[in-house]
Length: 103
Image 1 (cartoon, helix red, strand yellow):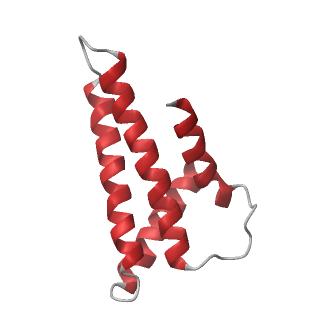
Image 2: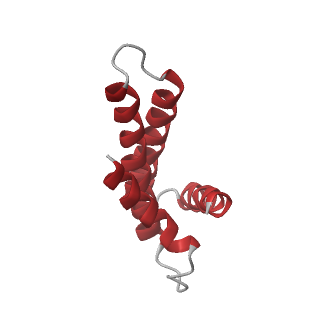
């Protein structure tokens, strides 16, 4: 599971590290962000449930589920960029702000 989390952090950190200075199209950025959120959320959810069988960490499981759900929402927005351009841009800005805050 740690490898999945490292993979997702690499996807998110790609923009924050300045490796991709040219702007990727919005659809590609949303797909990358959704993949990272889905992998991180699923990793946190599985870690919270699988590690402590007797007393699962409910807060970590909830955070993982919400992150996974947010990744699914980004995935849906990535396929409907033309129909909802404002919502897609705002979602990408929110994720980029969160990446800038954490990296």
